[in-house]
Length: 185
Image 1 (tube, rainbow, N blue to C red):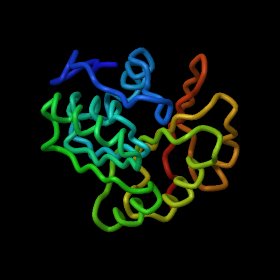
Image 2: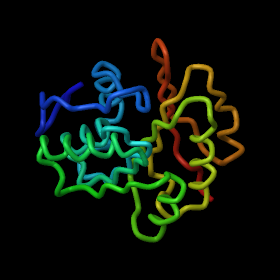
Image 3: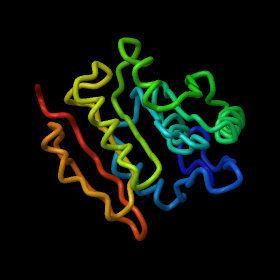
Image 4: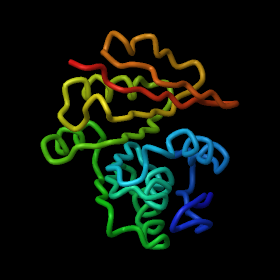
């Protein structure tokens, strides 16, 4: 695993041992950032269920103004902090070691985000719970792009009920990225 492009290009990234996290492969990360490349320069980025931080670090390397990482696993946080030190991108970040849902309430009224990425544990409906929270949140607006990684069979038919517009769904061999924006209130 490495940084694909930008100021920290080719810097190798650590990932925690074990199967608590699923680092995004370089090929999938490259495809993701090709899709969102116009959203990144100067953006505020939130990386939920951040793991070792590969997605948020890639965003920073490609010109995001700053990134908030939220992760609750100590081994993943240690890797994330090591990766930020290696890439010299730590001065543009805030790392929060908390449960995602606690962190969201703590971030409310403090930040607004242009892009939110989340890679929750698959098939536990956590992406839906985050989207439910964000429906009335002041952290985003109709221009904010929300991306979540999920298993291929994750049902997303509820999106319009929560007032989200499906922008794109990119399927890979074993998972998918879903891109949404909140509909105007």
